[in-house]
Length: 370
Image 1 (spheres, rainbow, N blue to C red):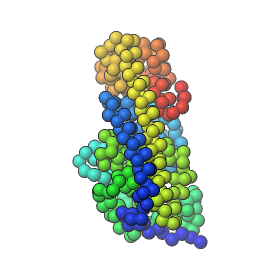
Image 2 (cartoon, helix red, strand yellow):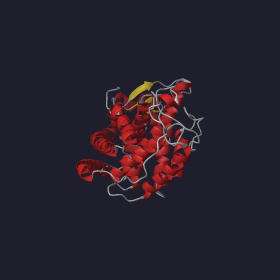
Image 3 (tube, rainbow, N blue to C red):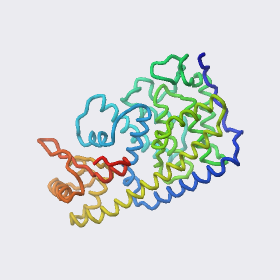
Image 4 (cartoon, helix red, strand yellow):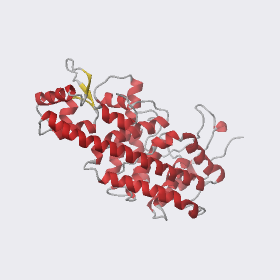
């Protein structure tokens, strides 16, 4: 028996058991508050956590089936050559980072709206898989979710038809702009409702996960939109999908909100640990870069590697601001000889040498890659 198109609940949700939610809200709020305090203690959080932003983009795309590693993304930016298919996968990651930065700038002027959501979708889908499926435009046809190649009769979930979808999107936009009892519970509902509406022909998952840090920023819960949930959602993928499906199947918003608040709590704790390790590494390397290079550009050189943990000589010169190529090359050689960075490609002809900052990559990835 085939599923009928879903009819999303009208927001706000009025049947939540708030007494049951209190401990979930408290744990998530405390952890996110501690994480925000960690960000506040960083002189330049955007530079220090740039590798984690790339890691989030990679994980978010991996949930959708894109298989690409951080070293491949960074290597591509440093001039490594890859197949056309791999370059398309890497483009998904660079699109994600660009869209996130654009959204942060936009949120300084106005809140998340349907117009901004469409603009972000267009950026995410530019020149990648699904890029031919009307990027930046809400769908006008019925879609469905299930195993690759399945028919609508075999679908696991059928989102609302386009007419119902329009009303649901307007209701969601109003709900996003409202002040609810608890902003984290509101965020849980927004994320689920966006995925239930599934307003685009492709890219809904990536955009829905991107809305999490953007709304934490909009609601002034975080000072920067740098909160990355895909690591937890990937590890809990089956429960994540089952909890979402239970909303449309049985109206179980309570179970979903409790799951999402738990995800926020665990991911915030993981983010705290990772951010602190990166901050500690930065402070340690700042002193060592200065001692090794005796250069006024030591900190700028370090910031270049935190911005791009794999880069070629040209990128290093541009990011560090060292205009003299000889000075830049001498600094890179000295750092490599002392084991601070690692040569991953020797220079040849017009092709610049490439270098990696292994310790930072390993922290961002959460495993030893170098």
